[in-house]
Image (cartoon, rainbow, N blue to C red):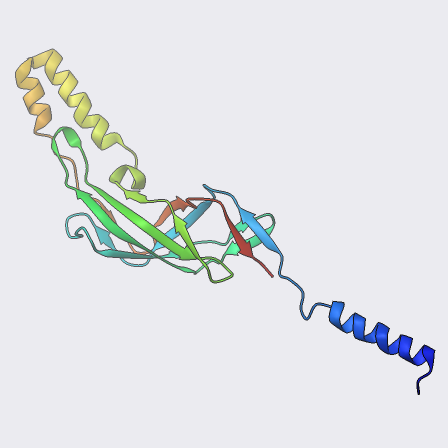
Length: 181
């Protein structure tokens, strides 16, 4: 069995086994920075009750797609941390909750850092409340002088309450690679 043809076949077969990869590499997709990520609040959030340092949980509200591939799945868990709560103020300034360190998971299981989410009444409805207070102050100044400005200062802004299921849009903080199937 030391036939030259047989040795050549064995050598070719051995070479093909060594040169053939054991698996195919998964393709990867580059996800650009600032790619929008819609987040659904998992629980109710109230600016009058939430405190700095509390965790806020979300789920991703819809699939996030880059280069025709799903890179973050709808329903993926996301979490952030309340870093500041600004109470309502004078002249109709409404409350604000700033949620930072927001993170979710890509389809390949790696963490994805997201931009902070600011929660204000103007994010949830029209800004007429603040404009009305400012307008009252200006009209008061014109009609009533300094007393009118003081009247505008008495117009207080409101707290913000976000129901579970409400949508906020964050975005990816930086470009990253995701292995897709």
